[in-house]
Amino acid sequence: MSPTLAARLGHRFGDAALLRQALTHRSYGTPHNERLEFVGDAVLNCVVARALYERFPQTQEGDLSRTRASLVNQETLARVARRLGVGAALQLGEGELRSGGQERDSILADALEALFGAVFVDAGYPAARAVIEAAYEDLLHEADPAALAKDPKTRLQELLQARRMPVPEYAVVATHGEAHAQRFDVECRIVSMNVTTTGSGTSRRIAEQAAAAEALRAVAARGDRRA
Amino acid sequence: MSPTLAARLGHRFGDAALLRQALTHRSYGTPHNERLEFVGDAVLNCVVARALYERFPQTQEGDLSRTRASLVNQETLARVARRLGVGAALQLGEGELRSGGQERDSILADALEALFGAVFVDAGYPAARAVIEAAYEDLLHEADPAALAKDPKTRLQELLQARRMPVPEYAVVATHGEAHAQRFDVECRIVSMNVTTTGSGTSRRIAEQAAAAEALRAVAARGDRRA
Image 1 (spheres, rainbow over the protein chains, first blue to last red):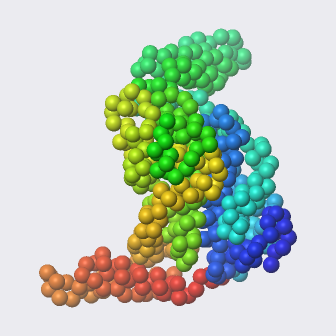
Image 2: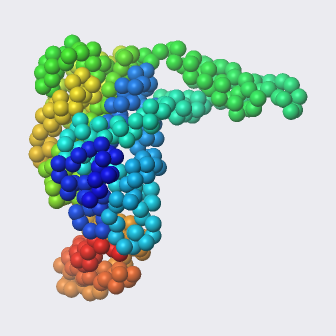
Image 3: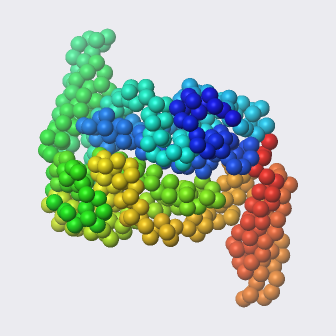
């Protein structure tokens, strides 16, 4: 039905019905691709989790998790699906076809997950991993947990909230230079921990982030050992 | 460090440091088990998804997904962890130890996921699958998507919302019998589809569910082919 798509995925299906089912949207009839999408989503998350775990041995769980989310969200999946030409191979009901379903992110993303699921069911985990790693090769290569990391103010606030402590206070303690080239010094105070740090920058916002980054370092220096 | 727990899991670790790390809570120090928990959660979801897909060939994605959620939630994970005696093997900081961390659901659930992750990293997918399927053997055997299925009113509402149609209307059209033994007849109307069904029961709520179940059958009889 779509030998070229299978070739682009890099998998020769033992059971061609699985490929057909993966490409069948529920608007077309049954068997449609929703059950395969369920297993496909699972194996995709597993393969990407493991790949990120290996690739970023120093990165913490929260950043790995955010990085994975950016790789398996609907937008990224639809982008990968377009690159593989999934849209033209889809079986859609008349209504979906007329309304441009072949180009819709949600339909493309679901179909790509179903294709991964079909490979997983057809030939097991190693085959699914190979297909997913090939389809995601450049995205995995370019993945950068640091770029997706939350800003220091957000992380500091979350850290304190997780410890059920009050949020930090920020205050501008000095400004330097003339109006068109000002510099701000901001203090970040965590009263409950007796921590006060300073940051500076060309805007209040930037100075606050710098102070928060210092505060995060100060809190971390006290050790993970909370007991 | 904990040969008996490894034996109960049914895995002989090539890298014993992974087992130790999986059992180390962040309150104890680094390396702690949060990164392993990330890959463990992923491989657990994958193995359970595939097992449910095989075991329930007629069950739709939504019910498979709900069934999986019931198997991998914190409560179930903690129950499996207790059965395996994970608590006694944990490395916790003084504070967590004093406050009963060995028995806390969240800590036990995270550690069990980390143990699955450690097996996955140590010996690959087949080893992780074997350990997870053994730990979950009875739970997978007893899993019953039908028992977890949503009630008919909820399913009908979700179905219509997914098709961007107005919610159904329910109305009591007759009551029979005396106050202590009344029966209610309720109509369910889906105006936009020209569907009207009736249900009856000993309470308004039960009659509404019966009418909604009929409406679901009527809608399904029109076929999945919406176009």
